[in-house]
Image (cartoon, rainbow, N blue to C red; front, side):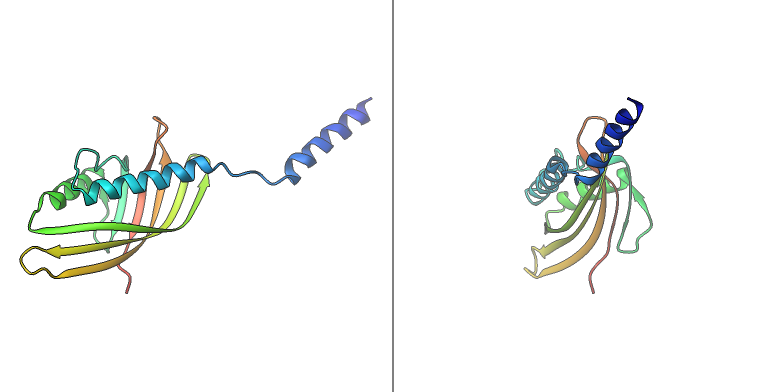
Length: 152
């Protein structure tokens, strides 16, 4: 009887480890939706939710500037969207999303387009980046860490 129980237990363990885990698409969709919502809000100059993509413990490195936090990010976003002398828009291209538990890594390229109202000149910049999302206590996925740099 003990041998049969042990055999059944080992067989069950083998089956559980031999069958590949089926990835839950919900976190990837939630992350894509959050990035899309932020982009739409930013491009519409809607500041009501502009900081919602970022976790309160945010730390980020951008274009070699000193490390910054959530407050610095929100201030910069509000300043950028309040400056009517220029128009800045974003789009993104996700290269990969890797989800592990309550964390996810997103490898992507942001494209910014800056136009000045006085000259009409448009400057496009590609910014490869790595965003680390964490599922927050409220269940939403927010960026906790990120790094972005201008592509050469």
